[in-house]
Amino acid sequence: MVTRMKILIVEDDLEAAAYLAKAFREAGIVSDHASDGESGLFMASENAYDVLVVDRMLPRRDGLSLISELRRRDIHTPVLILSALGQVDDRVTGLRAGGDDYLPKPYAFNELLARVEVLGRRKGAPEQDMVYRVGDLELDRLAHSVRRQGKEIPLQPREFRLLEYLMKNAGQVVTRTMLLENVWDYHFDPQTNVIDVHVSRLRSKIEKDFDTPLLRTVRGAGYMIKDDRTET
Image 1 (cartoon, rainbow, N blue to C red):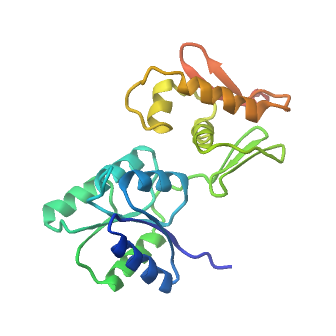
Image 2: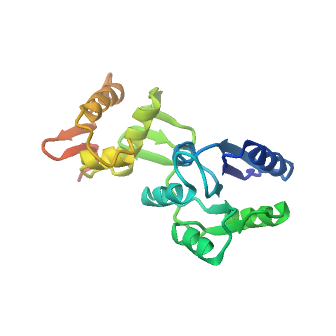
């Protein structure tokens, strides 16, 4: 079965976004839409896309900041920047921020489509694991599901992101600062017990009714997810 390309359109102009979605659909490409930078960042972080088409001037978080944050999170989905800012310096700034291609507005859709197809075929970017495993615990990023010993464990979105980050760094201590920046998008400590509460809830869900503990608190350092049974 041929897998259809899936892209994310991050565009605050609803009419322009609807036009793009319709044109991509007619070209056999599936698309999602985010109308601001924060929503685009969340969707691009939580879902697997072949290409992101990102407007540069967006509410809540501008396009370049969105791209830079994705790259900081080690998410390397190819990005095509669309912008009315089309001078050479503008294009250079966009590419240096982490964009893979830059197309000034106005544009011809046929050219946009060709550029998206080229980015979708690109194999040079590091691939992200779609499934993380720690012992008998399995997290599927694409299906957005968590199972242990084949039993599905329902998680809230924040709990899923927390577990995903811990499992991505399995066997390593994850500090509060790392969690605040990568799971909560805070670049400061709000001095609350939000992390402790979520870790406690997550631990209860992934360890209740199972014999082997996986999620531990490393006093004075942070948290770690690890299966000691895999050690030699």
